[in-house]
Length: 114
Length: 114
Image (cartoon, rainbow over all chains, first blue to last red; front, side):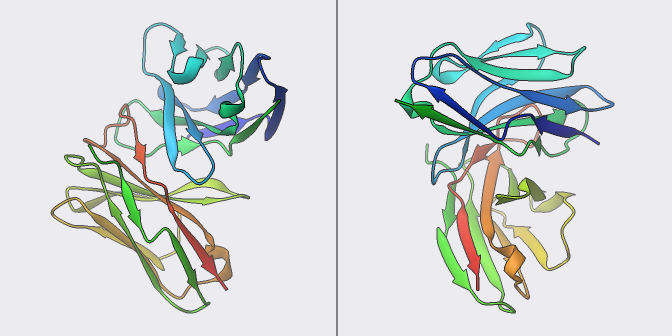
């Protein structure tokens, strides 16, 4: 079984400052890794995903994440945040083999302060 | 291409009643998954349907059921509603259900049980 821990439930940050949202996972098998974002009153939208290859993954809206296999982490970063980045961010994993569903972390609420 | 649509968007029911939620996936997508989102538990997987067959099931009681039609539209049903069933119910579709695929989420149905 897989599990995902998002280490911060809330992260306040000033506009134009950098941000890192932390994600650690546990799995006995190889996994695919995802970050999704949920804006108020909307469903989730994919930011980026790691399937294989380069451990640095670039996504939409200037976000990037780095897969670290030894530390079982997949932290999300943005060098300069905007007010419009205020949302809830979810890290998720799925085993490489088989068609098993995504397992989500509990989310990190990012609040960007003007 | 139209996105994933869910109806109704909001629903208020009383304990003991039953409810049916509907999800129309993106055209051509054969896999539909359902998730329950609550502030305390985050996103929890309910079930996945692929080509009218339930392929995966989460750890929910038998009061939660679903089905998928030949046009890939899906419904989920909750019988004998309890206060704890109040949640945002999200539907997601993807082309083939492969774990590497992006899940496309609908805006959700907000269910309130009084």
